[in-house]
Image (cartoon, rainbow, N blue to C red):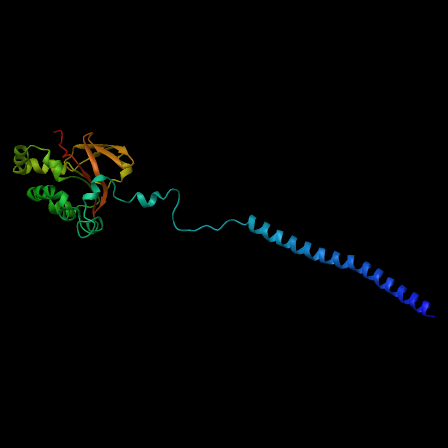
Amino acid sequence: MNTRISHISRTRRIAVTVAAAAVLPLALSACSDDSGSGSDSAKSDTSSKASAPAETSDDGMTGSGSTTTADQPFGSGCSAVPASGAGSFDGMAQDPVATAASNNPALSTLVAAVKKAGLVDTLNNAQNITVFAPTNDAFAKIPKATLDKVLNDKAQLTKILTYHVVGQKLAPKDLEKGSFDTLETSKVTTSGSGESYTVNDSAKVVCGDVKTSNANVYIIDTVLMPTS
């Protein structure tokens, strides 16, 4: 009888083992399906994210950022402009052109000439003009006897000074190949590109696109002389 009981017990263990063996593949298959489903879901999310357009930062800047540099003064002579105060770029932008120039020590000779010619109010009250402003060094190129003579001849001085003024605001790009009527009535010509410009093929712009409240100013290294 013990032999029979032992046989029955062994038979039951075999049955349990067979049942477990049958269930295990089903359980593994179910896990595999769940895992596959999760993987497919992850792949779907990744695919959706990859196909979605990338977010961009809307900071108002495009291309190479030329919008920031186009409005900035340029040229080696700009280093002579005070960094702060009324004679700085920010300070000059608040005042009309004759007043702004008077606060810039590099333009003191020009300012003295403008006062002698009685053109301060004319320049300050004008709207949307461009001034080619000779530096002190530009005036120093003129022989002293000649300069003194001009400074004491109001009509001649006025003619020369108004030849440096154009009745419209000129941006740097306008100077690339330009010809403009001046307040003196004769024309000035300009040429160049980038940050290198010349007026009448003789005067170099040493600090360009300087803003005042009523004018664009291009500081030049040579005094311009009208042809007539």
